[in-house]
Length: 198
Ligand code: ITT
Image 1 (cartoon, rainbow, N blue to C red):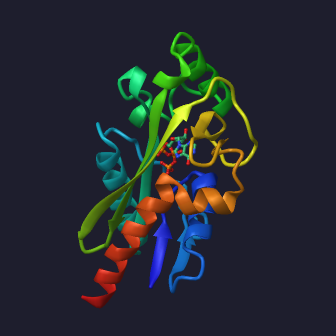
Image 2: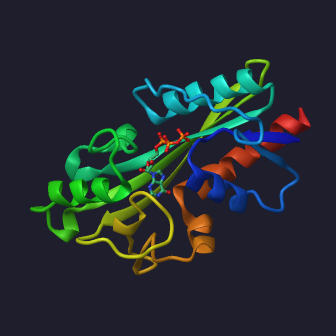
């Protein structure tokens, strides 16, 4: 079966290509189809936004579509930046700006109180209106300073106790085994297998 990976984020796209490698899936990108539309993320939750995007792009393309809405939830900040992870610090800002803002907000919070998690919700949608969503998470701690150059976004600040490394210090292969996105993708695979069998 053909599956449109409906994201405008090249980092996500790279991770899905690796995560789904070897599966009997023909992956397509928005770029392959010449689709440049952006969907406004007006939802209050990751699931709402993932569904908005999956529904839009399956209708637009006529293909089964996978959309990913993801972000970082920091316990000491009541779950911020959450669904605003991509827009944190305002428009036109970079990953480095967002990481700097996060460090600033946590300046008075000691290491042991910097619990966080990454969340990834995948919505899968078919042109006939069928839609399902699944979630993957990854627990970690917001480190005192950024480390590592792999990955993207908040990865340099996201410290994993089990690995004694930030997500940006791990080789991409390792991130793609354990990440919130990998966990969500495993659940998405079960949905796809069920759909193919039905
Ligand atoms: P699409 O909507 O087109 O998929 P986007 O970048 O706008 O692309 P989101 O709205 O889901 O996607 O925002 C996700 C943000 O959450 C992303 O820009 C990062 O700041 C953060 N994020 C998500 N997954 C991450 C990961 O694996 N590592 C680091 N940061 C991540």
